[in-house]
Image (cartoon, rainbow, N blue to C red; front, top):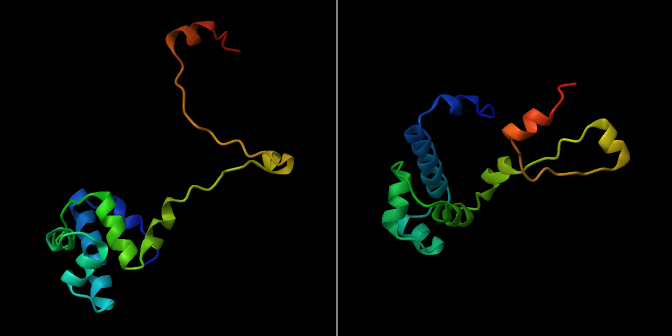
Length: 114
């Protein structure tokens, strides 16, 4: 399924279960036991079992598991693409925002509101 909009309606617990199911099915497809995967990923078998049951584990351990399963491609959705306006693109500008600043009360008073 390429449309992941259904994920917005899931609870955190249901998302953990989806992740656990993905890990388990990928492991089985690669014909690995839990012990083999845990050893290759340098984690405990109980940690692997926990994620496969939909439990909460450290992100570091999830990355180890996905790397071992050759499934780091799932993090491709986290890649941030620059949104350039046509004018910025034409000028070759690539200004990346680093923070968002809220206006303080003093700044609001200085603004003439034009």
